[in-house]
Each structure stands twice: as structure tokens, then as C-alpha cells.
Length: 288
Image (tube, rainbow, N blue to C red; front, side):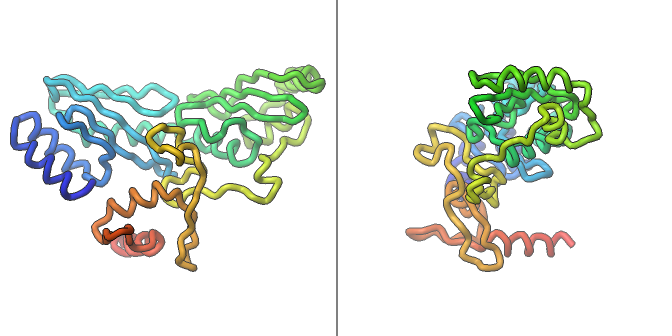
């Protein structure tokens, strides 16, 4: 968040005990993780990275009696996030619990990432972290809808066949006949192929040698579908680093947000900052 905005909220924080408490707790978490903050300080949104670099957002609504009463939480995850709260709890405790919850979901997200990367998934750029269903195009107007179980992602998924192609009934019968072949010790995609007795189609962009590259900041191929992003909504990476030792791809939106968040960034008519590869190397040397 810009320094001028921090100063404005710092002035507001001196106006009441509630404001001082909220400001102090944001300081503990770190302003660099704050995405949104309402004028009355009752609505906050934090950006959280899991261990695989996936970006998650936690929206927090505070009551007038906060911290005596727990905040209301909205998060984009497939399993219910049960918040443990006491009158002595703080925002940093909330984010710690959320990170622990994210760790429990790494297995299902890894399987979903593998599906998204390897198969012809319908409406891929409209899927969220909370969505555990994938509609897969098998070709010849035949589709399957797989629902992976969040608590047991390696188990046999729920499967529904859709379409009007002649191969539909045949594929459905083959799946039902082979369902006992499912082996939790085998890779998920290998199991799906075994049950269908068929090679699974690759995405069109994969076949054309034009596979989209993940953003080096948010680690997603596509931006979320969001009206606030305007024409960038749902778009892929659109910028590549000029540093030949880096050459990472980025969403220009993510790159601009990241550059504005670091203190070394210079602001003129353009935003100018250090290559992320160099920053990662610098940070790694500090941590040693």
C-alpha cells in the first residue's frame, strides 16, 4: 500500500480505540499483505501465498465489538475454514490459522493443477480455488464432469457424462465397468485414463505448441474473472521480463501491484523496479 495511504490511516488510527487496535494489528501482519481497507477500518482484505506460491485472498469484516466478537471471514477454499477465536486473538492469529488450513489443501490443489495443465478443461480461466469440479472435453461432443473430494482427493471422483456424441454411452459404460480399477497409489490422470480405456485429449493450446505460461508473481495462467480488472479480466500473461537471465512471463496487473509494493520502486510516468529474479536472489542471500 502506498505510503500516503498508510499516513492517512495512521491519522485515522488516532481517532478511537478501535481504530488504534486495527491499525496496530495491520502493522503486525504487514502492510505489504493488505489488499483493501475500508474508510471505517471494518473491512479488510489480505493477500496470502501458500507454500506452492498460489495466491489466496482473505476478506475480513470486523464488528463494532471487535475483538470481543470474532470477525466474519470470506475465503476462496473448498473446505470450511473454522476460525478459533478468543478475546485475546489478533489478525495475525487469524492469518496463521488460514495458512495452516491452506496447507491441508495442497494435495487436492496439486491434483487440480495437474488436470488443468494436462487435460482439455472447459472454462479453465473461470475456475476458482474453491472449485473442485472439472469439466473435461473428451472430443466428439463428449464431456465428463469430475468432482474431486477435498478430504480424500486420491479417491475415485464423482463422474457425470455430458454431451450428445455417439461415444457418450460407450464411455459411460466403460467407466462404470472399470471403476474397480481405481488405485489410490497411482497418479490421478493415469487412473482416469485407465477407467476410460482411452488416451485423454490435451488442451488445444498444448497441441498447437502455444501453451500459456504461468505468471511469475501469482503463479496462475489466467487472471480471475473480475469486473474490476476490466479488459484484463480472465486474460493470460501479457508481459515478459527483458532480463535475459530471467525471461519470466507476467500479468501486467500483477507486475504493477508487485512493483508498487516494494520500497526500491521509482515512480515517474512509468513504474520502474528491480527484476524479481534479482530480488529473489537477494532475499535468499539474506535468509542464509
